[in-house]
Image 1: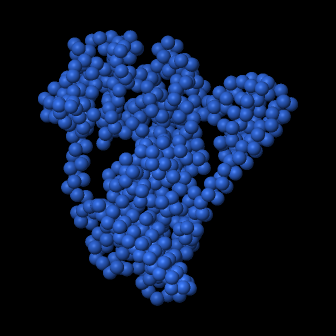
Image 2: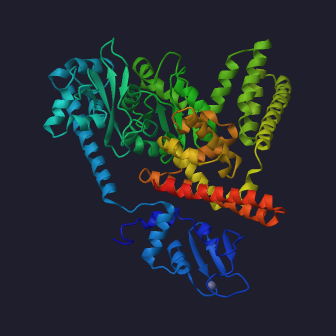
Image 3: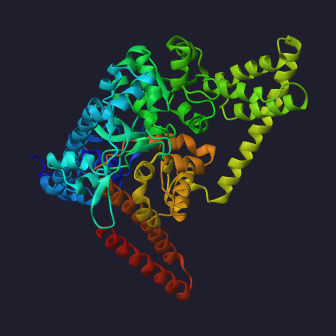
Length: 603
Ligand SMILES: [Zn+2]
């Protein structure tokens, strides 16, 4: 295998060329590139050039050049293979091992099990035991075509129907337990998780079944909807139901309709709106948005008007703005959901609702205004609306809605519209000042961040490294408890990164689950742009722990090195012997911490 079992691309991607070169060459920015005096030949004017974008370097003087591996080969005088291993070790990247291979195999088996189980549930629905459920589906207007398209199923009212069926295919109770399809009893045995439920297979983007949702069929059954727990295959916040079926239609129609429930999505697909996906009752997460925006940048939310999902989506409006996705909200009549609307008023009526969807901001403003008209109530309503508008950065959009809001409140009188507009601008200005004060206060609370990490820290490799560590912590919150204690807020070079780190640390401190949504609820508006960016960073599922291990180590090491340098400098400038020995003691402490860090990271 080239590279002897190492993923060279990954090492190349993760290794920071600029950071690697910096100890050898004093680099200066020259446009998109960095230049300096070549370390491989004698020269007085810089002809050594580094391109951080591509990760390549080249000397116009001696014509040496290459990637990270070539640089390490030449400076450390190593063979290619040794250079690869050195870099991999520094980055904490592991070779492709038999362990990794066996994990991949386990995943395949999990998928095979889900596939079998889905077919079992589907066959049961179509069999004798499923006749009552078929009637129920017919009553709710679900076509036979939809039963097939969505591979709907029935989990019979038994403790071991699935267990027995899967046993015939060689899947053990333990395996079903790991897949979340069976639950372990105190005596060690297993029983079916899904009993007497209508089954909605949950598929990934490529159409493989990765989990199940089950709707209760008896009135007294709790909960009404039951999902598979999160597994190696299934993360609710990263999965949209029916996405595999909606992908093509989304591209064709240039939009995605997002609903909350399985039945909503089925009704929409039946009504010819194949671009519909469902969030399965959770909030629309940044990962969901990322999935969707690869297909289309126009989303229409068709949620129950009083749903928690809609409220959550409104809170995420800043995220949508950052990733330049246009989100519209369809006004679903109160107390109804898309399924109800389609079944009672017809597909056409629902289609009109979707067509009439308004931009999220407009929807929010209208709702605020609807809470009061005229007099004192009207004032409060307008003030609420301005508070919503204050979140929009100055620009075309905000200007448009200042006019819109003035018109909407002045009910057609141009004179009143002008005075209202002036009032709106005044009120808006007050919001902006309040916001500004808050920003200044936060900055004053901690030392100016950039001076802590040296020149150019804002855009330095360090900030990319710290950003990637934050992204990994966000996407793999289960690892946060392990790594957060090794980090300090001042390890992060910008106020935004510090804010995100603080939020993660606060969640860890309260033993709460770390997720993008949870952090979003913690941070100030100023940090949401960064959060949006981080949440869209792809962090490979595999090896994320190694990645974190390497990243955290480099960050903590850099901090200790800085402290060491600072102390060494103070030692040189120290006047008295007492002062010197105090500094020496501190230096010894820092060295001990560095050794400890290396030990910790090994474990
Ligand atoms: Zn050279």
